[in-house]
Length: 198
Image (cartoon, rainbow, N blue to C red; front, side):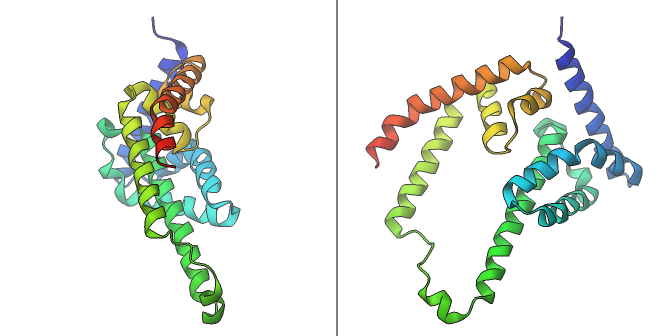
């Protein structure tokens, strides 16, 4: 028999998917309901990335504007509605972060900019960083899909264990165990490899 949490999570996912489908038809009320149901999650993620309330509020509005324009592109087989929204939010927040840095750099006087040390890694450091990123991606792909999903939700999307449980419909204890075991497995796989490259 299915747990109540799993049934509730599946129902919530179906409700959100229905709101996205209705939004795709131009239903403004559906977009409003989608915003009411998900904006706290989206705002939390964007605020964690930007650390600026005003900027986070602007990006959240940008996210739902993009949802309004692109709701028809949502494909349930590629992920949950909340996962889709959070991917849009993360991309928008990172774009805003980069744009803000570029704006500040353009405003800075040329003399000050030339005296500031470069933030670009030298070729050797860039190579090491790229190799580490490749190793981490490879190790993540070696995990089972259940462990990989909870680790990605925790570390790429910044969800708490209870938020992951609600998103995936898994019991909280299962989520905690999968994160712990997945991180231990990543440590086993990556520890020796990364030490060899230090």
